[in-house]
Length: 164
Picture 1 (tube, rainbow, N blue to C red):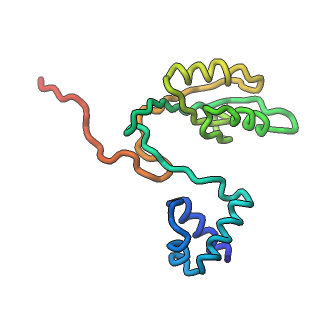
Picture 2 (cartoon, rainbow, N blue to C red; picture 1 turned 90 degrees about the vertical axis):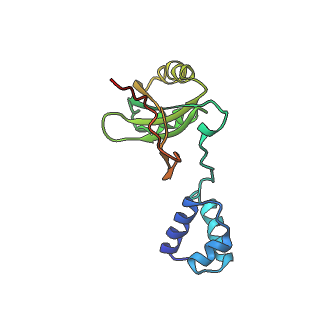
Picture 3 (tube, one colour; picture 1 turned 60 degrees about the horizontal axis):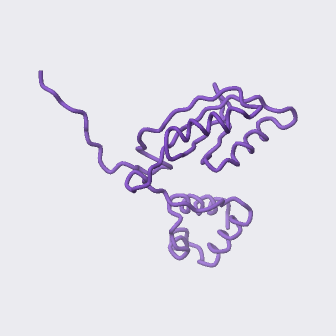
């Protein structure tokens, strides 16, 4: 497969991981077996890391609180940010961990059952780590778009209107 075709294949899978290989083959104009072989290679090489559904948890009975945590850290000599980022990424609450440019070093997305769960995670698991200098927690109040997909079906003005 040509590099350009691989990029197109990856974009198709990223947009909809449920596309059958037969449909992808038609879209890219290549044999189905070539698509299957290329996907297997991409998985083997760790380019495709997994497949996940995008779920609007607000439409379920699952209570979930999400937060974005900004962390300033002291990188270790010879390891830079890798060791602390790896350590933090191992916590089950951590959904994403990114090295950032700008005013802080790492950005996390975490989830918990309550605001208190997240606060305790920060206080008892993150803050005590030697490399962590400071944290700033921002709670997600509502999601409108995630991974390129609109989460809200309809925007309604729910503010109360009072007449004077």
